[in-house]
Length: 287
Image (cartoon, rainbow, N blue to C red; front, top):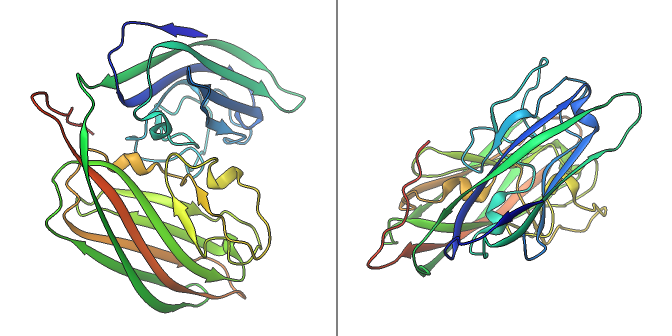
C-alpha cells in the first residue's frame, strides 16, 4: 500500500514502476487498485518463462507496446510497457488515499521477490472542460483469409487537444481470435485493439466499445460464442492518444492472420472529448 496525500484534483494520468524479480514472469498477476476501489490489471500471466521481465518496468499508457502483445524473447527487464488494463481507467479520479499493488503467483515451480514499487501522477490545477465529437462509418468490406482491410475516418473542426477516446467496431467473424485490429491516429501514433484475442468464438467484436474505463481488458474478458463484447479495454490503451490533435485521418486496420474463417468489417467509429481549461494549461505529453 502507498498512501497519497495533498495531490490536487483531478488526475490527468497515472504511471507505475514495479520491481518484481521472478524466475517465471508468466506466473504473475499484478493489479493496481486506486483509493476508490477501481482495480486494473498491469499484467495477468504475460511473459512466459522469462526471468525478471518486470523487475524495473515503467508502466505507462504512453509506452510503445502493450504487455499482452510484446515479443518477449529473453530474460531481463522490459523498461517500458503499456499495461494489460489501461491506466486511463483512473483518469479524473481523486489521487489522495490508499493505492494498492497486488502481486499474485498463480502457479507452482518458480518464485521471486516483490522488491518495491512507485506511482507517478500528472494532475491539473482545476477540473478541465470538454467538447464532444463523434464520427461513425458504414464499411461493408469482406475480411477473407490472410487479408488486411483498412478504413478511414476524417475529423475536422474539433478541438486540438484530445482528452479521451472511445472506438466502436462492428466486425462479424467466425473466429474472433484470427483478428488483429489496430487504430492509427492522424499523428501516426497507433494502439492495438485486439491481438488475436477471443479464440474460435464468433462475432465477439460485432458491437463493441473499446475504452479505458471498460470493466476488463479484452485479454481477460468472458467470451461467449456468438455474443459481442459490449465494452472492453483494448490491448493498447486509448489514452495513448491523449494530448494529441484529433483532427485529420484516423485509420482502422483489420488483419485476418489465420485460414478457414472469414468475416466482414461492417462499420466502425470513434467518439472523443477535446479538453481546455483556463487559466491553467493541460500538460503536454512527451514520448
